[in-house]
Image 1 (tube, one colour):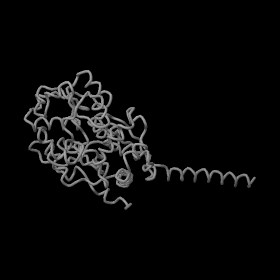
Image 2 (cartoon, helix red, strand yellow; image 1 turned 90 degrees about the horizontal axis):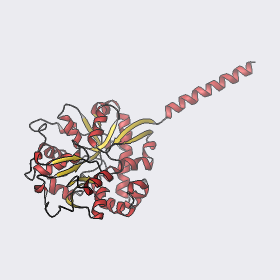
Image 3 (cartoon, helix red, strand yellow; image 1 turned 180 degrees about the vertical axis):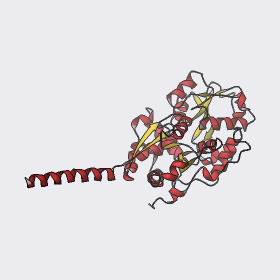
Image 4 (cartoon, helix red, strand yellow; image 1 turned 45 degrees about the horizontal axis):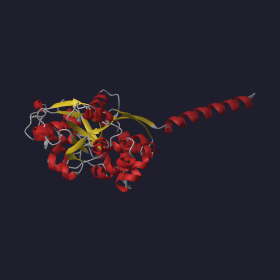
Length: 337
């Protein structure tokens, strides 16, 4: 009888220790919302998952897809997700409204976006100065594509009241809007750009993919794709934020040391939109946008503030503390290669 009791105690003890061990080493659950998972500008999100870097850091990361960055921002503020893979400019825009978000890893120093114009009217629209009276597609109202479109208009003498911004998303919905004549053009990213140029339905008017062209149109580097989070959450979950940062910086290093062909091979086939060769070509040209160490370029935030202030009355005359819109604390602590 004693032997039975001893065996039972040992079995129960093993069960308890196993449960404790499992909970002690279980991956930490994090939910991130991506402002358009299939967009090449947000490649680091899915690629980090594909490379297994989240799991290497002990994280169980769920990636949720939300085509419009402004909706992803709203989900973050509501506490539905812990972070957003989206444009840095939202951190400035939201500070003017009394809330605080910050970029913790900066993926790119250019928007990676292009203002396309329907081929049907390309001969009449030679620059943003010809936007007057046009309907231009954006992912969503209050989105970064909307911000950039409005800036291009006002910086070329066209009041935003004389341009119509129409939310059409990206990918297939953007393409359909161009083909059906619902929009005269619009701001979008790869692979949507290449798909429309290849079919001849649209032409590139303003290219914000390379550092050189971004400086030409916006007056400086425009840090865009990033991982941004609520400042209050970052301050109370620093260990977790460091793990996320470690994973993303490893991915950015991977991007900088591998070819577009190698990167494409790691991505889900449906991201190619039916044309793998086109996807590789676009990525080869777009890789220049990514920052290998995830560090915010010092000249970037003032450029973004200047761009937003040109048309956003909520920012005009308001003091924005740019130092609170991003942090380099975590990228600085990432282990060396």
